[in-house]
Structures are given as C-alpha cells and as structure tokens.
Figure (cartoon, protein in one colour):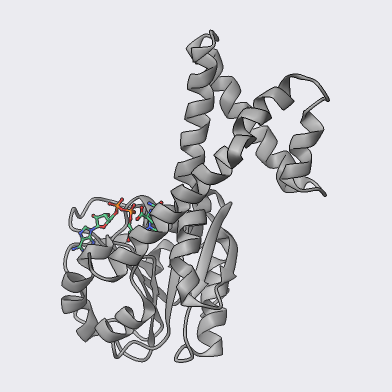
Length: 270
Ligand SMILES: NC(=O)C1=CN([C@@H]2O[C@H](COP(=O)(O)OP(=O)(O)OC[C@H]3O[C@@H](n4cnc5c(N)ncnc54)[C@H](O)[C@@H]3O)[C@@H](O)[C@H]2O)C=CC1
Ligand SMILES: O=C(O)[C@@H]1CCC=N1
C-alpha cells in the first residue's frame, strides 16, 4: 500500500453508497487509474476510473475488493468473484445484514475480510463507518482498512458482530431518519401557517446549525435542549409534547428496533 491507498481497488457495484465512498477517496487524492468498477450498466463513474461489465481474468496482488451491490446479489456475485480471490486480495463488504461468517464461506480463499457499515455523508468526509472483522484478518489488514476509511469520517471497530445490525440501524440508516425529521419539521411549520418554501429553508438551516452546535458543545444534547427552553416559555411547552410518556424516545427506539430486526432477517436469508 502506498500513501494509505490500496494498490488496486475493485468495486463490485457503485451506486448510492459505494459511489459516495469512491467520490470521497478520489477527492482525497486516490489515483483513479488504480480503480476498476464493475457495474452492469457500464455507465461512467468518474474521470480515469475503468468501468467494466464483466469480471477480469484475475485480481492482482494487493487488490482491495469492495462489495457495494445489494445484499441479495451476494450469491450471484460470489459465483463469479470467489474463484478470482486469493490470499493477497482483501475485501471490504458494505452489504447490510451479511455476516462475516457468510462472507468467509462465500469467498474462502480471500485474505483479510472486513465488514463495514458506512452512511451517506461519507461523501463529504462526515460519515460514520462501523467496522467488524475476525482473527483471520491480520493486524496490517486492519490498519490498511483504517487508512482507507479514514477520509470518510468517524470509523469505529465493533467488538461484537452481534452489535452490527444495531449500529447499522443507528448510523447506517440514521441519515434517512434525520432527513425524515427535517421534512416533518418543515411540513409542521407549513401546517401552522408558515409559507412552505420559508418553512423548508428555515427547518434545514435550524437542523444544520443545531447539529453543528451540538457537535462542538461541551455539554450533552439533553442539556442544550434545556438551555433553549426558558422557564415557562414556548420551547418547554413544545418539549412537553415530545417528552410526554417518552413519546419521541419510544418512537426512535421502535424505529431502530424495526431496522435492526430487518438486518437480522436479512442475515437469515429472509
Ligand atoms: N444507501 C445507503 O445509505 C447504504 C447502503 N449500504 C449498502 O450498500 C449496498 C448498495 O446499496 P445502494 O448503494 O443504496 O444501492 P444502489 O442500488 O444505489 O447500488 C447498487 C449497485 O449495484 C450494482 N449492481 C446491480 N447488480 C449487480 C451485480 N450483479 N453485480 C455487481 N453490481 C451490481 C448496480 O448497478 C448499482 O450500481 C447495499 O448492500 C446496502 O446494504 C450500506 C450503508 C448505507
Ligand atoms: O437500507 C438498507 O438496507 C441500507 C443499510 C443502511 C442504509 N441502507
């Protein structure tokens, strides 16, 4: 590996998620001539990146394969990709609900295999990436993956793979839940009479400013909420609605549980 980049990067699938990862790597200096993308459409990805529609004859030593297609496609992909894999090939899988054991069984000759769960803001270097591997992966293999994922944002190893679907629910799916919240804040503003376009702009800017403030603050978001709420004032009345019977906490817990349970069902092949 030179300057933290793999010698070769072979992406199987390059849609919303893998595309954001690749964009960030290219923005951070990855040489596009090191990258090959396999995608059925054959459509271009980025200047200098080789796009193919069929598998190559072989994968060179030092290749890192990124599995970026949909989880249900893993069997079809493995049928063609596994014979090309060997001990000098590393693999990073972003397939939701696909366990490391499943990957090892489908790609038995592969060297280091790491399971990752990124989220979409990786494209801006502000993502979250959960990671998991096992003792078959070498310390240098772990370090290489950490170097590759560093430009994407916060990455953290999970000690226990059982946590993986839970952290996927929180950070992998989390952007969608926040986007839904912004949309709801905007539409609620409209519902109480604010012009729709103004409500949309103000909801977005409020969430952006508040998220940046919370990230930089020395106190918890719960304390910050109390700092907004003047005693006897408007915010407290609003918070009382969110807090009644732990309404928001219950809603978020049920949301994460549903996402987590789907990951577990996908791992069972459902
Ligand atoms: N969208 C998200 O926020 C996140 C997605 N993921 C994971 O990323 C993976 C991809 O999801 P998205 O990017 O959202 O989906 P997508 O539909 O945008 O991308 C899938 C890509 O796979 C390609 N593809 C289809 N059939 C293929 C085949 N037989 N061989 C190789 N490539 C094939 C498609 O052309 C497309 O480029 C999934 O496994 C998902 O679990 C993980 C974290 C977050
Ligand atoms: O919806 C999914 O299955 C994937 C996993 C996290 C975000 N998207």
